[in-house]
Amino acid sequence: MKNYLIRMMPLFVCTLSAFNATSQDDAAPIFEYTHEGKAYPPVFFVTNVDDKSVKSKMLQYEAFFALDEKAVGLPIGVRVLKGHRTKQDGTQASTLMLSASTLGIIPIVSNTEFKVRYDVFVQGKSIESFEYTMDSTDVDNLWTSAYKEHETSPTEEQFLLDTIPQFLKELRESEVVQQTFEEYWEYFSE
Image (cartoon, rainbow, N blue to C red; front, top):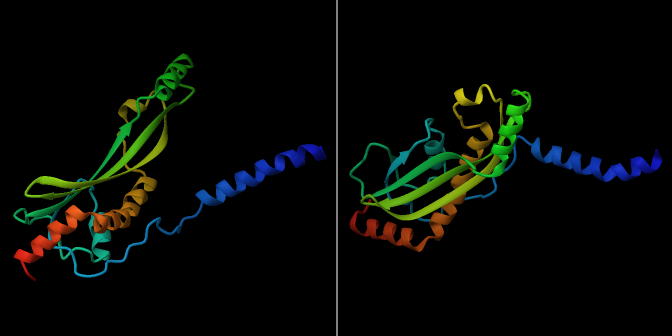
């Protein structure tokens, strides 16, 4: 019995550390961003995110002079899109067959991908794109999965908000975008 406990100790330690890593609610964002210098020009802001959390979070960083959803005539725009995609690997097909053979007792498992895409465009043409993805696993019931719409989970919402400082950091490093912003301020001063 003592040997068994000694052999199982690393497993218990790994499980405990994994539990602690996943149970942190107030985790710090992966990327920190502080805007330095002149604010970026006002942009036409487009998103398919229903709530206003993305826009308000971007405004907190004070990187843009303005994010306007109604100013269609602005030459520069930022588009934020989110999307879900079920991966076409063997996981879903094999668990679907297994679930069907047990009349739905065993759930259907599918691997999904949540993607957030930021596009910077000038006069409707994209000049730079930034994509961030998160993989997850969904478990559904055979009988109710056809009627279930995929809703954004709280983890995916947090991932979406965590991509904003990373996007702003990569935006600052993009030469094409920075040249466009400088050209805007050259023609349109504050």
